[in-house]
Length: 337
Image (cartoon, rainbow, N blue to C red; front, top):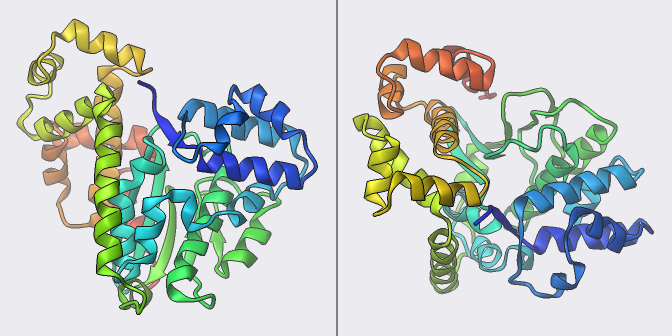
């Protein structure tokens, strides 16, 4: 099964396109998405189709701020139980940690992190295929939705310390900066929002343990259904478990899932991926996370990711992030205190 995303984003795009006076149906059909499914709040679209939709939007819209217009239409119902659990959270930290746990409900390619550095926190995200690099509209929409989510908890006066984007500055950057109430720095290593520790850890008066319990249960069930249908995600979890032991071979992973190596590769191919891609993507994603958390030495990270020597890890990391692990760690530490 291919990676999928909630249909909610597609609905927000549809609404923004109609507001622009564009032929939304034509744009959706160009991307291979059936717009009649938008009325089904539980529908999911393939992540690749969503990527094609954003490309079609960029092609047809002359508005450089179309991503911002999409993000403005976000509301808690857009993320279903995850949105309601967000509203009932005890603090922004609690809300963001929960979002990290259930990010795949929104998009199975989405990876999010919350990490602390000095007096600030970093909330960062990326897609496993890193397809936001050529689609700045996606990041505009995501950060506008994120600031809306934060202000629902902390109040309309909330502004982050800084926004960091991997894309180059564009015509929408000043508009995004004004909407977020914080400087936007482009051309960074990761996409992240830097937030003051006091804002992240502040207790919220609207917290509801009962509402959290109900929606957490719904999220757990929903996530199980998503993950059970994807052999790729089962392989990814097993790879992460076995990397430190050096036993994350194709044969060992397949055996742990009670199938032959050939069967595993065939099913992975049907989902548009491969064993070698999953191993590399897992190492790449987790290496960045471990370094941002700043709790482990580079040699410990190399071990956890299954590298026999730190030098091999450093070479691989430079291929992934265009800098050495030490340089990346220093850049993370530059978050304003």
